[in-house]
Amino acid sequence: MNMPKFVRKDAKKKLRFKSKRKTKWRRQKGRDSKIRQKMKGYPKSPDIGYGSPKKTRHLIQGKEPITIFNAKELDLIKLGPNQIIRVAHTSLKNKIEIAKKAKEKNLPILNMNLKKILKKEKIKVKTEIKKDEIKK
Image (cartoon, rainbow, N blue to C red; front, side, top):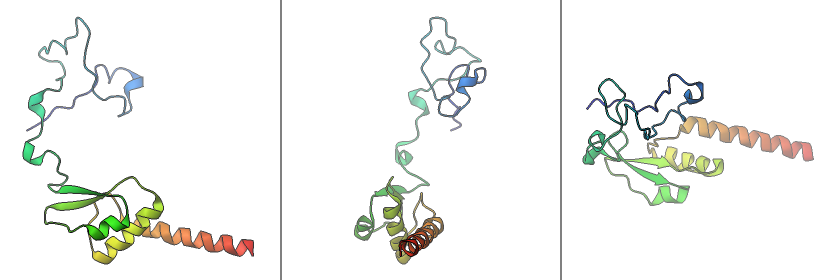
C-alpha cells in the first residue's frame, strides 16, 4: 500500500516547521480547515485504514526484535530464525560488553555497529593507560 506522508499544515511555508521533529502531524481544528474537512486536493490526514497489517505490525526487517539491556541477558537468550537482537539505550560500558559477547557468539545486532563499539573500547583503554602514566 502506498502511504502518503502526513505532514503538518503549512510546513513547507513556515520556517519554524522545517526540521523533521516539528513537521510531525497535528490534527486540524480550525473551523474552515480544508484538511479537516477532507477536501480533494489537500493533504491526507491519518486514518485507521492506513495501518500496517497485523502480521507485520511490530516487526523490524520482517523479524521480531528482542531488547537487551546488558551482557547477562545476551547469555540467556536463544534466538529463533525470525528474531533479531536490539540493544536498549544503555551506557558505553554495557554496549562494549554486549559487543564482545555478540562477536564471540556471532550474533546479529540490529542497532549496533560492533566494529565501531570495539574501536571505542580500544581508545578508552589507551586513554586510561595515558592517565595512569601521568599520575606516576
